[in-house]
View 1 (cartoon, rainbow, N blue to C red):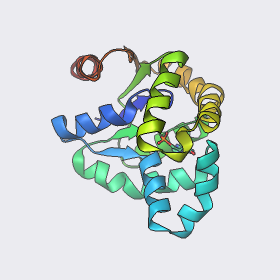
View 2: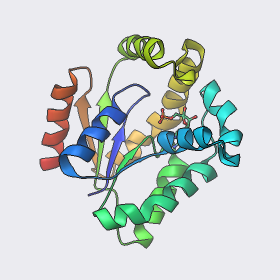
View 3: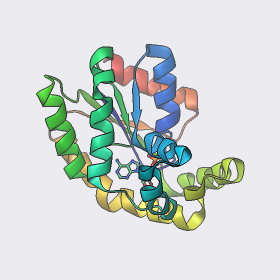
Amino acid sequence: MNLILFGPPAAGKGTQAKRLVDARKMVQLSTGDMLRAAIASGSALGKRVSGIMERGDLVSDAIVIELIEARLPEADAAGGAIFDGFPRNVAQAEALDEMLATRGAKIDLVVRLKVDDPALMQRIAGRFAESGRPDDNPESFKVRLDAYNTQTAPLLPYYQSQGKLVEVDGMGSVDAVAAAIDKALDA
Ligand code: AMP
């Protein structure tokens, strides 16, 4: 099963992906986590992307496509993966379809977590105060939300036309959202 957890920043994708990893032994492929690890390691890639990420802009397609491709053997071994934060635009979605097709696989389900903007703003203010993640500051978050609305949300019709899109109310508690995702996965 290849699943995309889809939604704006702070919708709860990472939280729900980690729960599925624990509960269902699925593999999580988060490009955001991979990029933050590159920054933490002080690698050349980390140095290239840190300013871009801090501003809230998207890094280049080539970088994230390469990061995902390098991790696809893990997905093969596990019988699929949860894609979290990837794809972020149509070019990335098409690249993912191609990479999976060459391995005899495909995206099975796209779960969209729906959370309205005021709730996202409220969550992010709390997360910034707690973790101090640099791109959670109000200016960068606005850029990230704009990037979602202009580049990522247009992917919804792409998956809807393939009959793969399921919408889940992401405004409830973590447990309520988890239950809704489980229902979609088991349908
Ligand atoms: P995330 O943790 O998914 O919110 O990602 C944090 C940041 O990493 C984003 O604001 C982008 O700068 C970068 N990033 C993560 N995934 C992607 C992607 N698929 N395409 C481009 N940039 C990405």
